[in-house]
Image (cartoon, rainbow, N blue to C red; front, side):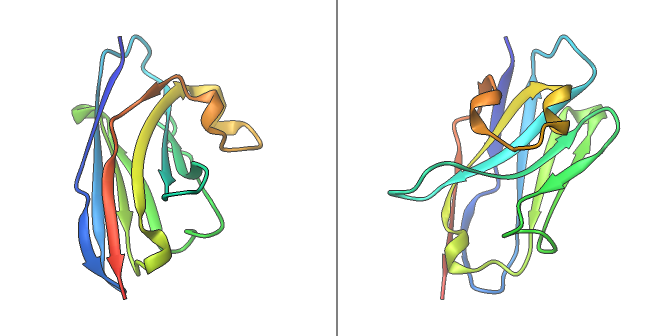
Length: 127
């Protein structure tokens, strides 16, 4: 059973940075798609970024491109999300999720395609 544990959330002022971590265990494949999603109160869950753990290929939502960077350390089975230039609209619960590696090349970063989810970590950005 795949397990994902997020950490690194917190409260920052606008313009600040945070780095989220997602520690994974229970994989049976060496290649997977790890995605970061976020959900603000009253809003739908949206995809933020994804990384294919074999090739390192990445993809970002337009709202975070140039500010967020997703990376992985396969030796530690950990994926990171470095968030710079944070804005109040980035405030949300952030989740990491895992899927088969092919989903990293799908046209849409859709939550419904990810089978495994972490418990989430809260990010709050104040103005």
